[in-house]
Structures are given as structure tokens and as C-alpha cells.
Amino acid sequence: RRTRRGGGRMSAPRRVLILAPHPDDEIVACGLSAWRARRDGAQISVLYLTGGVPPREALWRWQRAGYAARVARRRAEAETAAALLRLAPVGFLDIPARRLRFCLDEAAQAVDRALAATGAGEIWVPAFEGAHQDHDAANALAARYRDRSWVWEFAAYNFAGGRVNSNWFFDARQGVIEDHLSRDEARLKRKALAAYASESGN
Image (tube, rainbow, N blue to C red):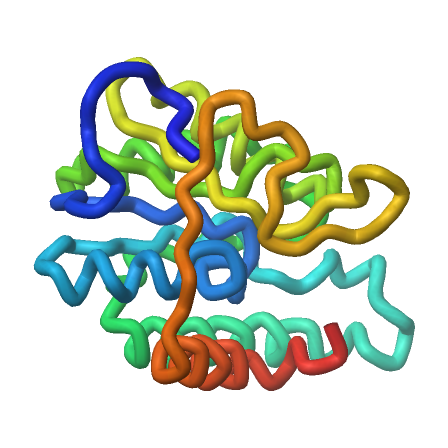
């Protein structure tokens, strides 16, 4: 879903920066759209806004000693998934999951650096859905760039109408483009998701 008015085409972006609130959101929300754009010649970069692991103090006591290993594993999984879809990681921020909203200035500086380094004219980000605070914080962060970049939103999940909805916008006022996957594309997405073995319980 585009959040800037005017012309432009979703199907032929040139340089794109994906803002992934956590490692795996780039796959869940827009992995195959990114893969298709990359196949068509676009440069697709990913900035991971958090390490994907809650703060050390939020873990069970017996998990805290392995905090650094958990973060390193999530990063390695992100690199594996990115290689499968031919995406280019451009940064991993040292912000714990569930803490992005407290670190928006730091994250904005990282986005500025990533945009300058990649020359991206488009930002792709999960929609503001009220489902996960890091997703909503990433969306709010992307909104500050909408006057100088195209900002596209991807549906992840929400709880509209009293039920969990995946890949569906509860508010489609600005129009929706649907991507329907072929069997081969669905297999590729499942393979990329499987790279995140640490998230298999989710």
C-alpha cells in the first residue's frame, strides 16, 4: 500500500530500502515482493531495526546468560534468508525487540545513513496495525520520509473484527495491491522462513 500520493509503480522499483522491525519481518511482510523486484533488476537493501530478541532483563533468568548468542543467531539467520532472496543487509541495530519506540532517534540516524549509502528512493515497511509495537514504531519512523521517498506498507497481521488477520489491511483507504504466489514462490518463501529456526515457535 503506497502512502505517498502521485505517480510511480510498485512493479518496477529501482532502489528499495526495507525497514525490518525484527529479522524475519522482511520475509513475512514482503519477502516475495522483494524477490520479484530483485529478479527484475532492483537493488533491495534491508535495515534490521532491532536484534529480534527481547531485552536481557525480560528473559527468564536461565536464558539471560545466552542473550548475546541469541542475538548472533538471529543475525546469522537473517543473512541466510537474505542470501536466499538476494537481498542486501545494510545494518543490524543493537536495539532489543520491544524497545524500538524508545530509540527512534537512533533508528532515524541509521535510516538516514542507509538511504545515503544505497540511494534508495523507496522505503518498504510493515503497516501500522496495532499488533506489535516494533512494527508500529517502524511505520511511524518511515512516515517521516514520505515527503522525499515513496513509502510502501505491507500487511503483516492485525486483530481487526475480533480475529487475527494475516496479510490483510484492516484499513485500505489508499488502495491495495495483492501479490499472489506461484507454487515455486510459495516454496521459496517457506524456505526463507525456515531459515529463522529460532522463531519456529512463533
